[in-house]
Each structure stands twice: as C-alpha cells, then as structure tokens.
Amino acid sequence: MKKIALVLPEVYPVPAVLGGAVEELVTILIEQNEIEQKAEFIVFSMANEAAEEKAKEYKHTKIVYIQKTSFCDRLINRILRHTNPLVKGKTLIDIAYYRRVFAYLKQHPVDAIVAEGGLYHEFHRFAEEFGKEKIYLHIHHHLLCEPYIDHLYGGVIGISEFATKEWMKTTEDKAVRPYTVYNCVNEDKFTKKIAGEEREKLRAEFGFTPEDTVVMYCGRILEVKGAKELVQAVINLNNPHIKLLMIGSAISGGNAATPYVAEVQKLVEKAGERVKFTGYIDNKELYRYYQSADMQVIPSLWEEAAGLIAIEGMLSGLPLIVTKSGGLVEYATADTAIQVDRENIVLNLEKAICELAEDTVKREQMREASLKKAKEFPKSRFYSSFVEVFYDEGNGKK
Image (tube, rainbow, N blue to C red; front, side):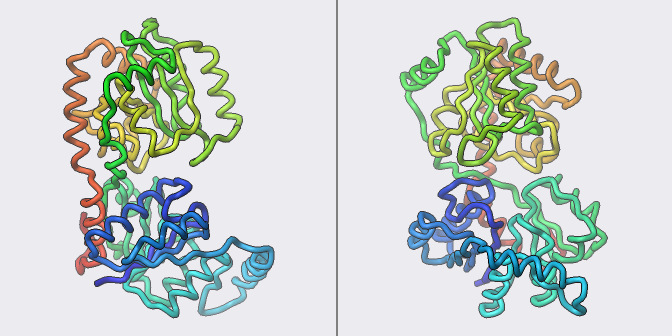
C-alpha cells in the first residue's frame, strides 16, 4: 500500500471544520480512504482543536498538526531567507511550517509527497532530499509554471484538462508526468431533498412568490467572480418576476467587509426587492437554498480551473448559466449549461437568464441533464482516480 503525504497550506485545518475548498477535498479523500483503504495517507495541517478531535475517528490516515508560526519562527525565517543565496548545494527552507513538514518526512519516509497548494517554491528542498520523482503538485487553480517553481515536481495533477495543459504548456520540464483528476463535492450534502412546502417557505422568507423565477449565485464575492455584473444584469431586466438570490462572502467561512463587497451591496440596495444578499451560509445548509432556486449562474471573469459550485448546482438539479471560463466548461457542459462569452458579459447574462426564465421546457431538460451529469463526479471516482496516480508507472494519464 502506497504511503502518500498530503501537504496542506498553512491556512485552514483538516478535517475541514473551518471550510476551505482544498481542505474539503482532502477531507473527502481521507473519509473515502476509511471506506476503501487503497492508500495510507499522512496529512500535514495547521493545528486546530476541533479538527484534532474529529481526526481521532480516522484509522487509516495520520494527521500531523503543525503549530502556528511563532515570533521566533519568523526571525529564523528571515535569517534563512538572507542566508539562502550564500549556501551552495542545497536550498534552505525559510518557512517554519514547511521546515517541520520536511523534518517529519525525513524521519518517516513516504512513497509520494503532494503539494496541495500553498507556497510552491518551498518544495525545492523536498525535491533535493527525496527526489523530484516523488514530488507532485495538485493544481487547484489556474497556475502557469514560472522559472522559480519549475523542475521541482515529477508529476502534476490538474483538476481539469485545462489546468493540466496550462502547466504543461509553460514548463520547461517536459519529463513531468501530467494527470487530470476531476474534482468532486460531498454529494451526501446536496442530494438531500426538501419538501415543496419547505421550498416555498424559504422562498417566501426572501419575499419571493411562486410566480418568481429565482436565479442563484453562490460563491465568494470577488471581482473575478463577476458578482457585480450579475446583479447589474438582473437590474437591467424588464421582467420584475426574475429575482436573484446571492449567497457568499469575500472569505471562506465568514463575512468580511471589503471595498468590492461594499460595491456589490450598494448595487443590491439599488435593486430593491429584485435581489436578496444572504452573506455566508454554512456549507451543510446550502442544499436548501439550491433547491429553492430555479437556475444557477456562475459568471466568472477569470479562467476557472474547475467548477465545484457547478457540481453542487447539478446535484441539486439546476440548469446552469456559466461563462466560457477555463475548466469550468468541462464540468458544466452544453447540455447542462448555457455557456456565455465573458466579453459583453452583462448583456450576455441578461439574454441567457431571460431565455431560461421564459422556456420552462428547456429548464426541465437541463435539470434532468444536470442530475445525470452530476453522477460523473462522485466521491468514490475522485478518490480512486487520485490514488491511481501514484500506482502509475507510465508517463502520466487521466
């Protein structure tokens, strides 16, 4: 059985008691491994009491919790950063979190080490000590290879063909083994159903009537996510029965005031009863809101590597409207989504929303297609495809 180390960034803990997309995915890997037991995971995570308590349930994964960086650690980091250019033959690790991971792995050898985000350049020393062929990069966002992180990884695991190809187009190291492993979500959270009465009650809480068509946005309130453009598109529509339900915040796991969030809120106020903005909703409650909507819009303005929220929407049986953005269209395909160009996005969103609002037959066809497509992204397939990467003796594969 392969021993696989998963190195999380120093942001949120695993299990994902505080949220975080990468942390949620690693938690799925851990919990699926408890069922299928195809690997032995060693996970490195920032320390957290609630996570550590929950981790006691796991029998086939060891989680090594790293304490928060201290003032003394930061001083050492700075010294090492200035010393690094003077040292010949090896790279010094100038971040305490990664020094502790490295020290543990020297004492406890593994078959593979996976960078699950974070500071990619900190794996220089890992490649020198353990061999580049053992170091993998799990690409969770649109990431181009730059010289300072090139030649560190023996394999890259993209969450879409788009993400994998973007790295391979920009690396000088053509011996890197490329893989694509499509993401999943915890489908158990989104296949739960609510009764028609509960649906109407929840909609009524926002002032939505049975005659209204409810458009849903769920995601972080960031400029690159196109939230403001979506609100403007709804404001521009002549149909007063098209309403927008916005769920999200600037940061994962809580509400935060940022200049962009303030801009969006100001536009929401201008929209009046047409737009309702909930702020952050806990992930375990989201299924209720998805099932209260009539369609989902993902108006990304940048290159999305994948589409986790698209999977959530499809599991909930929603027809989608998405921008033609990176790997997002690999998840939300043409049978499940109206795919729109990012150029003239406000106008394009207006047209797509009107089309779905007026065509209930098309909405039903897309709803059925979404439910069918969602079956391609179960936890079991994600886990198996991920683990298979480390048993591959070839030059990379899906």
